[in-house]
Length: 121
Picture 1 (cartoon, rainbow, N blue to C red):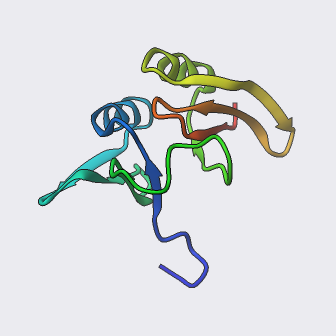
Picture 2 (picture 1 turned 30 degrees about the horizontal axis):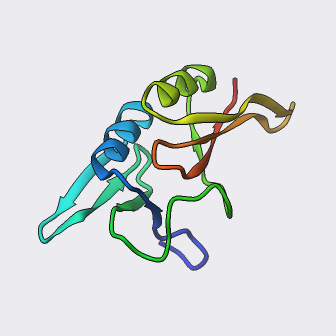
């Protein structure tokens, strides 16, 4: 990791099991549980990005405000169908950004966090 790289993404959740299942199904993320921290799980993306889901009751709740992490997918429409089936909700359907920057969509995950999708097609 280098200066300025994103070192860790953390998402709050009200249902750790459902969040893990959803991101594993939709994005292919793998999870590692930490002994003694039953309310937290680390994830790794297929490309190696690291992060975590916190089910701890803290000051932060799942939110539709603030920065948006965009997850790259092969098919935005298919991902949104699965996200909605797993308890999420589409906020912005697949939308062309430009010829140079391709497509995006926004959704609320099953815990209520706002996230984005990005795809070249």
